[in-house]
Amino acid sequence: MYRLPTEHARGRQSRWRFCPGLFMSVVMKPRVKKLLGLAVLLPAVTIYFFAAAALSEVLPANTLIKTAYFIVAGVVWAFPVKYLIFWMNSET
Image (cartoon, rainbow, N blue to C red; front, side, top):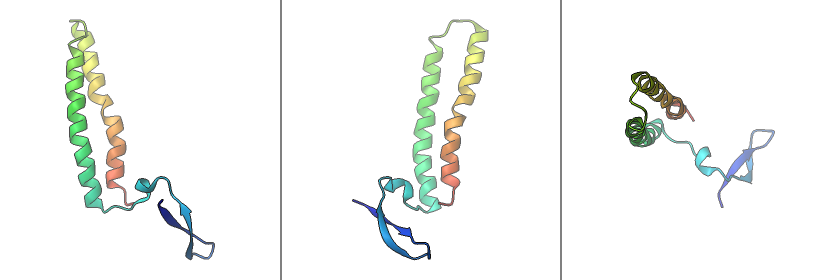
């Protein structure tokens, strides 16, 4: 069981509390965070792009539908990646 210190009103760290989300509370160096983020980002984006290309084969042969699909698929991946990049660049 992992425990992390909590602060008293006076600023001393004397009491301990249970921390179920230990991974989220661990302070990592920026280089480690960027390395982990890169290790997650590159395979995830590669898999997403191959999946988007494979899914486009199922669409009808209409050029307008395929164009709209690729515009949406080309933008949608950036929303989840945004949070990963914010985490990689955060101080804590």
